Image (tube, rainbow, N blue to C red; front, side):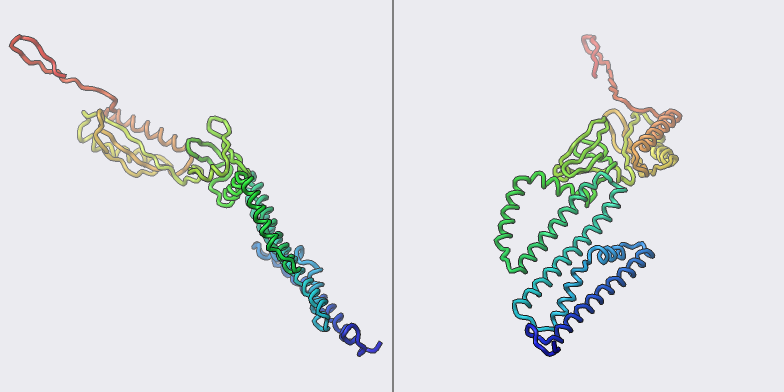
Length: 360
C-alpha cells in the first residue's frame, strides 16, 4: 500500500507517524518516570525529610502506566485528522484519565500524610488511632465523590439533579444521626487539636481523673476513687477542661494565723522567716509573704510560693516540709498559733444596794 494512499481521511504515512509519535512518547514518559523514581529513591535514603518519600510514593505506586499510555496516544492522535466524533471521544478519554490520575495522586497524598501522622500518634496516644482511621476514611470518601462528579460532568451527564438529591439525602441522614456525627467530629477535633492525650490528669466540671481512652463517640476517665467516668465527646468539648498534666509549675497560696498577743518585733520577723524556709527547699520558688489582715481571733499572714514541678506528690511533700519547719521555728521563737478563742472582760461596780454587777 503506497504511503500516500488515504486511509480513514489521512495518508498511510501520517498514521505511521502517529504510531511512531505515540510509541516514542510512551517510551519517553516511561523512561522519565524511571529516572525520577531512581533519583527520588536515592535522595530519600540520604535525607530524613518526608518530601522525597512522598515523591517516591506518588511516582512508584500512584502514577499508572495507563495514564502514560493515554497521554502518548493523545500525542499521537494530534498528528492525524480525526472525525469530530472520534476526536471528541479521544478528548473525553484523556480528560477521564487525567481526573482519575489526579484522584490517585490526591488519594496517595492524603494517605501518605495521614499515615505519617498516625505513626507519630501511635507513640504518643495509641488509643486514638481509630479517630485517625475515620479521618482518613472521610477524606478519601469526599475526594472520590468529587472525582466521580467531575467524571460524570465531563461525560456530558447533568449532575445538578444528582447533587441536589445527594444534598437532600445528606440532610436527612445528618438529622437522623446528628448526635453520632457530632460526637464523631468532636473526636476528630480532640485528636487534631489535642487538648489532652491518654495519661493526662484532667478536671471537667466536678469530675476529675486520668484520661484512659479517646474513642469515636466517648472519652473515658479513670477517677481517683477507681471508677470509670464516660463523657460524650460533644459534651466534653462544650465543657471547660483543666489539664493538670500540662502544668509547668504549681502556684501555692496558704494562710496562717498568730495570736493578737504576738509582739511587733516577732510579727515583723515572720515574713523573712517563711522566705528562708521556702528558699531552703528544692523545687520551690518563694514569691511573697505578708501580714495580710486582722482576723476575728488571729493576725493573718498570707504566703505564696511556686513548686517548679507539676507532680502533686512533690507539691504535698514541699507543703509538708514548710508546715513542719514553720511549726518548729514558731516554737523556738515563742510565737503562738491562733485558734478560735473568746476573751471575757469582767468589771465590778459598787451600787447603792451593795450588789455586784458583771459586764461581759
